[in-house]
View: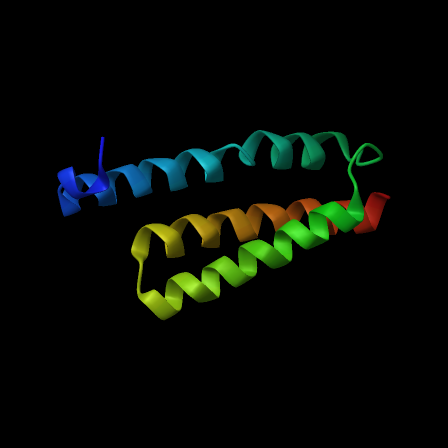
Length: 91
């Protein structure tokens, strides 16, 4: 299916759905890290790089005034900062 065949509303809906799913996937990890305080299996460099990438996507979304991107990246950034802070505190 060519993208030209999709309406702008459908494209926004697809983007919002994708953003929601990729954001919510981090919620169980953040809850587990907070609850167990066990972060030994998590890579600090990988999580730092991902968190920086999320922050840059957030800046990009703000520059474009793209609300699905801004919303999802804001929530993802909050979750990732929680995971990274827990990793730094508990190793």
